[in-house]
Length: 179
Image (cartoon, rainbow, N blue to C red):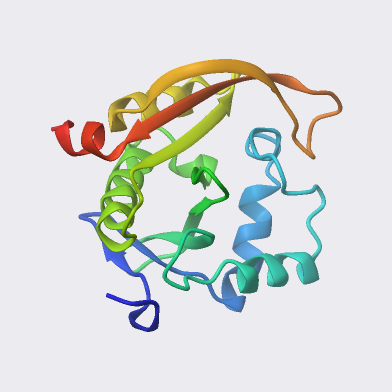
């Protein structure tokens, strides 16, 4: 499927879909939550509405790396976002803390990565990282087949100082081998 056909995925509990301007209030509430914001690198706190609208517009799927999608409960509200951005392509995701601990991040990212590997020719490797004080993201990445490749210090607009973070890589072949 090309860019014109959009990018929407359904899992048993989720709809992973293009973001719209109507999602801006929920995005702002979730991403600036004090439990979420420090885990994000580039989202400011506060996150003005105009900047959220621009973030949504710049993240539309165009058939290549450099896009963001919303994560919503099936026929329900937006509960987070995910995307694939940069070179090498880096995975990111965040969920509303009210939804944590239910396996939704793993469900969403498994479907998202499978679709990315299928739709984006030449995508053979994806990177990811998480701050060391976010072990839940480590568990999600491990379940998806990511392997740790290093560690360093990371920046977050919601943290006063750099903090330790852990770097991962996932090869298409490793992902396809995960049951």
